[in-house]
Length: 562
Image (cartoon, rainbow, N blue to C red; front, side, top):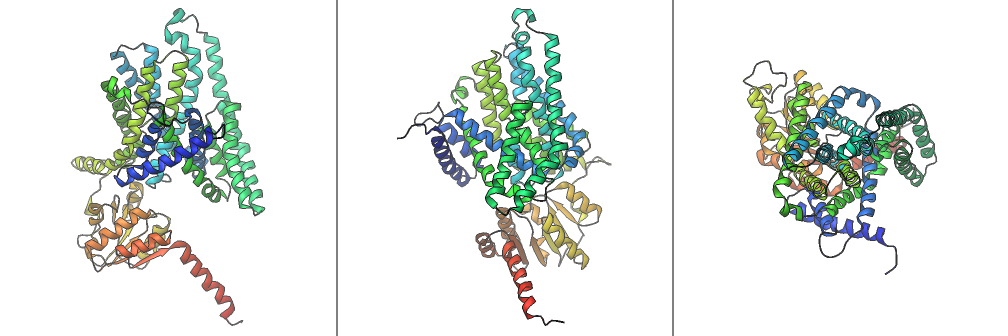
């Protein structure tokens, strides 16, 4: 076997095991990321057999974080960031304080020193970039209001953690209680804080002023060359280069640097192509993040300190969730938005591991403390998809509870918005870019319409326009039933998710064997499956575009000249 194959081994074994474990998890109706975590545990140092290089796996996973944040930045704009600053800034700061105090309070009960408790609490306060973004993307919520709030919140958390990483070494003597705090230099500490804030401000200003001109110009120039290969390299070079430069020159995290790179690249008319080129790399390296987390975990802590593990998980999953939920409600957002934002933040990840490692280096955190943080990360990441599944029934229960309170600003999901007798109407599932066009056309022709949509803000807007709308996931039979498909004349499935579309078609056909069902799809395989499940017409976007262009092209030769 040739020497120096650690990188190849980490990639080959990590991705292969992740594939099989993710496939098994999916077959067992578990989230794939549970399989990825178990794959990491299998190749980690705490289980027998092959042991991958944890440092290489961690660096590869960092690439995934960079590409994910770059992709998010491409879908964001400066206006989007400014629009959520009123809730993202105070919300993130208050939630960090609450979670830190909860973690600190727990450790005081366990008899830990104050400094160790503070590092422990801080590590539990910051959410994982990868988990949050994957969760929002899988549910199509990244471009919604709740998604923008969650991402803005995450950016603020990252900025706070950058400052914490700078302050911890300076405060370490005081937090350890050594030298009576004599090792603390107040002047040097002030200079460190100001220097860090200055670097972050300089980086953000540089990106928003110079970057907004240079990066779109660069992408346009490369695109004009007509080389797909060079354009892909330009995209990856922009994301990784700016992320690395932000870390080296400005002491800003790679993830934050990549996010702002994406924000300025979004000003280019080629931003959609850039996002498409980065997507395959994003997905592969993001999987390696979960594998690397699994590698770090020592399962012995579950036996040695089960109650401490449970308390850690409760702080992350329950304490942070309740705090974020109440904060969002206080800013007078809907219950649906509050639940989505709070659940997306109910986990910990990359910065937690960095803080734990720094705490160990500074002799502020014990090995048990680090293991508890890792256990909390594993449990919260595993539970996060299940928490998202609970948001809909929890929201329905909360809305029912609020109905008895007149004048509630949060509204409720009452079905009284629907006409008393529904018959011969159209049910439109999904009101995104495609669904909106279909819905407006149906309304223009006075077709009675009921919309089923997961975005509560869109549902509220439709109801204000007197359009009957049902909030929820149309793939769930009880949600679809509220739109009365059994008496409908037409069901249009405009959601882009293939699994969701198949479930909707199946439920609609079961409810009404005679209803006409039209669905959208992105590939031939899904189209065949939709038709098998009962769709009368499944439209493959690229094929329909090709047919339309062919018709226009042939028309140029068949039309008689004037």
